[in-house]
Amino acid sequence: MIEARSWSGLLPARPHAGVIAAWALMACLNLSAGVVIASWPERQTDLDTMWRWGHAWLLQGSNLYATDVDAPDYPPHAVVALAPVGTLPAKWAAPVWAGFNLGLALLAPYLAVRVARPTAALSAAALPICMFLCWGGFRTLLQFSLLTLVFGLLAMALADRRPTLGGLCLGLVLIKPQIAAPFFLWAVFTRRLRLVALALAVVTAGFALFCLRAQASPLMVVRRYLEILQMFYMGDATLIGLAQIRPLIALSSSNTVLVDVIALATAVAILSGICVLGTVEGRRRQVLLFSAPALAGIWSLLAFYHLTYGFILLLPVATLLIFDGDPETTVFRTRLFWALQLALMFDVPGLWRRFGHLTGAPPIVSEFAIHVDRLLMLGLFASVAMLALRARKHFRR
Image 1: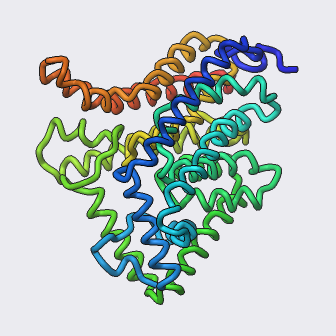
Image 2: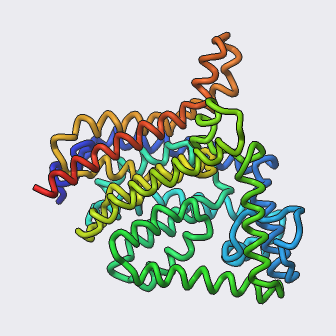
Image 3: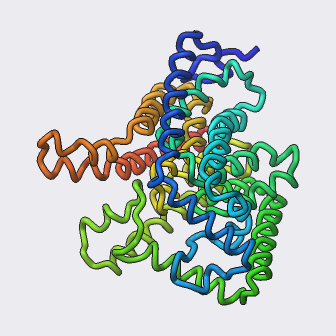
């Protein structure tokens, strides 16, 4: 039986049944909304695109990177890994993928808790699992971020017991590099080099398969992929994530090149700090680190393109706040956790876009509302970094 003190300072090990029922009801409503949203044709466009890519490459042998029309911003090995989607009948792709993601939505929070507390009973884990399932990101059931997140959590869970399978999972996470980065860094920091080698082997094999089936030059594929990334994610025409810091930097300058340089330099500086911390933390070879996937996950949200469904990358942050064992930071972690929980349940920028015009608020309020997620992630990063530095001082003692 799990004692409350060994379970968490934030959540009870044996919560009242009524509390679990209330959160479970909200989780069911949230996921039900996701099922309804998945039935809307306008929300199926990304899945339709992946279906076309998989169908064209696997069944027709097309080199998807040889054209500017419908060019993939996914890496070649991702096209290979997700190609089975293209074998589904077109009319069944959305319901099948939504149902599959519904199962993944239940699995992801469970894995996040089990990584933090491997011996946790399901009765104790039920409360945080239901709370996480209330996040807005779990309402998106037709994307691929949830799949990659589950592979990342599986890689952590299997790293020591079944390292070969864990390495394969880590390789599959790399189909979405912005999701993979926190988990890949975790493997590097904790010196699980077998996982890293297997992951890179998976990527190499997938890349080779793509080139062989498409009869494409590897150099041409790499060159075109980099050009596509530049087209989508650099300059004023770039796709901007909800938490990406580039728009905040752009408030101070209209020079596109300067903004890109500052944004890149900021991302590199933050990553460098994470790497320094990870190098120190990794010497203990423990599973739960502040550096990765927690801080690295926040960094990914700040540096790369993520929409609402990308915030599920904060699951390791939430579990770290819940299960960190420092009693002196319990009050601070409790406040931070609830701020994060509420922010991820209620999409402030999204609500403001829909209903802000009804308030008659001045423009400065609208400007603030648009950047709420960015400011939240900056504050969250600073707060978790502070906890990490405090933990390091205690460790050195």
